[in-house]
Structures are given as C-alpha cells and as structure tokens.
Amino acid sequence: MDEFIQTTADEAHIKRERAKARELRKTPYFRDLLKKGICHYCGKHFPPEELTLDHIIPVARGGKSTKGNLVVSCRRCNQGKSCQTPVEQLLDELEKNGTL
Image 1 (cartoon, rainbow, N blue to C red):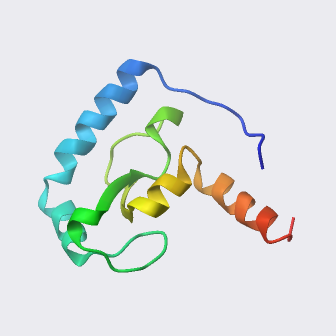
Image 2: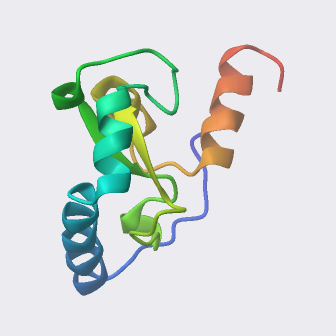
Image 3: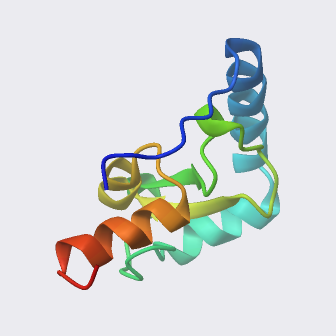
C-alpha cells in the first residue's frame, strides 16, 4: 500500500508535540508502562531502556501527545510503523499476506 492520503503537520506542531511527549514520558503513568516492559504492538517483553513512546497517529500526520495517542513500543515496531496510521499498517499487513 504505497498510496495514502498525505496529511502533514507544520514544524511548530511537531516540535510542540514532541516536547509534550518527552514530558509525558516522565509521568508516573508512562513510567509504570515502561517498567512493565511490554510492547503495545508485538506484545513482547523488553527492558525499559529498549522501549519508546510511540504516537499511534504520528505527530508528523497531525497526531497529538496525549495519553490516548501514546503507547509504549519496542524500537523495532516503532521504526517499522514509521509514519503510518493504524489503518495503513493493517492494510499493509493484509497486502503482504495476500488477503487484499
């Protein structure tokens, strides 16, 4: 699935939301999630230092740094997701598996 509707956020939005995410990472809620060490996407366990906060709707696509849009993920899943939305990820998986 190479085609998707490209929506981009301006640089000020990206900078602001990434700063918010850095602050949210320090909150007890996210510290606890990081300590649990479970990737939201693959479900595998990792040490906290190998986990990142991922925006489900990417900041570059207009996503915000809120509790509902941030999840803990391993670096591999986060990098594999790139700038995709969950729907785009699902469609890519279906296409790879030949079910589309």
